[in-house]
Amino acid sequence: MNLELRHLRALCVIADTGSITKAATRLGVSQPALTALLQRVEREIGGQVFARGRHGVQPTPLGQFVLVRSRTVLMAMEDLHRTAARQIRPVVDMVRLGGIAGPVSVGLADRLGDHLPDVEVRLHAEYSPRLLWELLLSERLDAAATLDYPGFELRPPPNVLWEVIVLEPVFVALWEGHPFAERDEIDLADLADEPMALTPSDGAGWPDCWHLACQQAGFTPRVLYTISDAVPIREMVATRRAISPCQAVFPASEGVVVRPLTGSPITLRHLLVCRRDGPLAEHFNDLVRLAREAYQAYATRRPEYLSWLRRRGHEA
Image: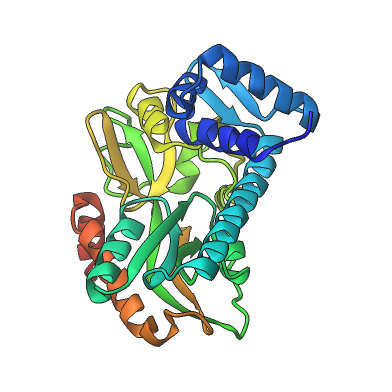
């Protein structure tokens, strides 16, 4: 069997939904048919793409590699169709914005649309900062709101404009009633014996920087769960099966509290990157301002983060 674009799309939908059943519904096929297609793809690739579990499916290390390449191929085909369409008919002005999946990138896209009302803003959200970077350098994106981590900082080439939007500490999510939940801050070393749930590698330094910080604190983290979606991670925490490192803007909820780490051993950088030869280069300063506004609008709804900032004499 030769891999086709429909196979790659199916893999991406399975990864996005975390469930073969949900993916089958979105694709308009039966669950058995999609399962059989996945098995054929795995035989063709020569390994397991997804690990099955009680909470759905998660990409294996091989699956993460296959998914990154699949999304790149699909994006290239979209560009091919779009470029071909331009040869036969005019289209409205359009810019391509990338971002880490979440409300900050959505907020930036909304603000950019208001700032450039005559331009169509298309947002392409990804989990992996590395993939966003590759899409920008290959001219498939005009600008992107992305992340990097201490010890794994991006080094943009001269043809890329870039600016740090904000430095954000990594906090930890605990269940209500956890012995550390009443603390204002938690020493990282105190988490040595805690079961943890982590998101998988994003290709740009996470969770490598977390493992490094834990080693510097004198322990190897007990990672029992590797889960790509925040919803099941929240469930793991709320049901007392694991704690999880998280962004400072991660929202607390019923059964889940969010606490800072003493001394902020990990601080991620939110970055705005833009191609110098792209249509957004002349608006770069406005992009930086709008990105900061989008981050602040989201951060101000997180009381734990605001309290932490006030104790240090900062504002979101």
